[in-house]
Length: 339
Image (cartoon, one colour):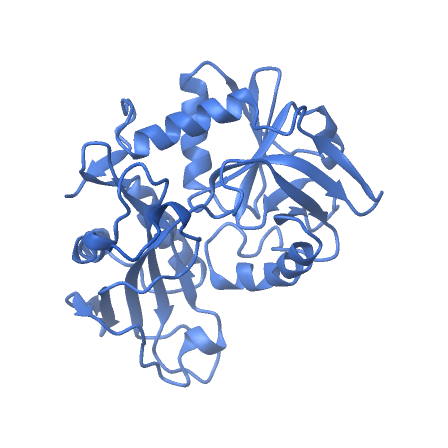
């Protein structure tokens, strides 16, 4: 792909050659189908369009330092999609269908996997939706599972540089007993209003607080929050937070390098006490936070000391990315070579 500027790819959609599809009909999943079309024919009464029966995942394939293609913790993505399907009453994709569709999508589009050393990767988007027609509010009887891929750069345009974040108090991303802990489109629709507004104000993303007391940290846009102080990695505990596979990995990695770990409610008043803070997720990996602004006081209540990423965030980032690209030892067996 000589025409792609690998080192300056945005985090966005780039057309590739093929995608992979599979239908659930009459109680079972069919065979994988390969398509070169970017479009899907869908019934106008499909439950995905009317009742939100839709869920998706995000994972990446990496061109390693050895030239091999690696997936990172795909089984965790499968489990999360299964939980999402259960959450909105959809047929669960089997593990075999999920894995085979992901691998086929990656390898059919191998020429789009960015070269090692460019900082880019191949983003993989599996999604599941109700394709069957229903007019009454009820689960569909037919579902479609699709996997497409696209080469991407960093989620935040700053890359691994501190971003500015604004505390969001005017909207809620998800209710405590709602769908915040599963990866469904409605959560992201609910976040768009705040995201558009804070982008216009010059911030990278909103920081959502809990929907009940507006006191405890939930998520940062589409990523999990973490703070570091006293040699401890601290991340929120909440029923409305999506379980981030990146965050789960960082927790294990933090313990491995000698940090203490706390998963607990984090009061927004605690923010000024952190030595480092960041957002983590598949798209962003880790984005250090340089400033957190609170409109309630019209002041920023957290700053990095010198405007640079902190030493612990940097070590975690470099180790995690090193594992993903096969540059450092993988003591956790998180990666799988597929090509």
